[in-house]
Image (cartoon, rainbow, N blue to C red; front, side, top):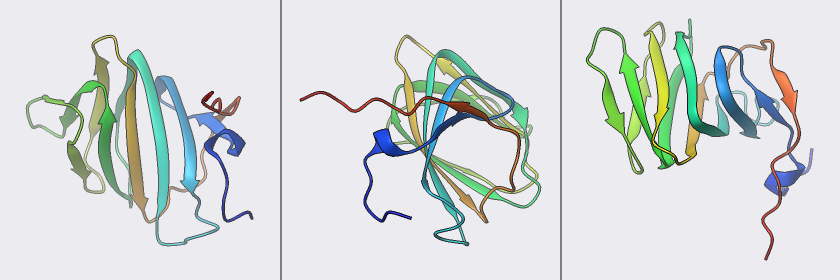
Length: 129
């Protein structure tokens, strides 16, 4: 495992139950068994369908874009850059991108997610100078 890599070198994937979504694991369970960290990008109109995680805490930090987030029975909230979303295990949650800007997120899971069916995608492109 390389300790220093560019984002364009990391494998990208589409998680199950998500549309118009591309994720890249920045920290994998093999490196750090206590958590994993993901960079997620959801295109305009992208969604994470209602779901929960049996054992994992999920923390989302919104970098760019806006989304509607529903947690359990709470009313939907609009979240934008700088928002921290904390999701305990077994809480149903859903995300929907609003507006015309790609939603960019940092997502942490602790413990790391269990292996699941993920669709491999081409790596994220390296930004040109």
